[in-house]
Length: 74
Image (cartoon, rainbow, N blue to C red; front, top):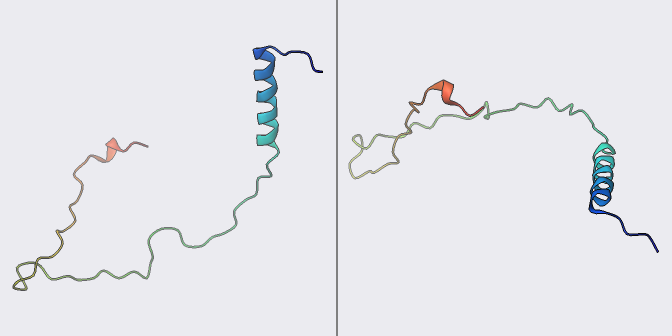
């Protein structure tokens, strides 16, 4: 039977095993150069204003953010 190991030895063995598992993953490059971002073929749908059509209650217009551009989290 194996001798008892200390907590430190167990932690080191676990760390070595985890590092070996992480380093064994084969890294491949992504060569997919498809379009990234919003669909370039998307069209803007012109919706009537609430005042243009009687008895029509539309969705509220999207508001432009007034935050400073410097306050981005990244």
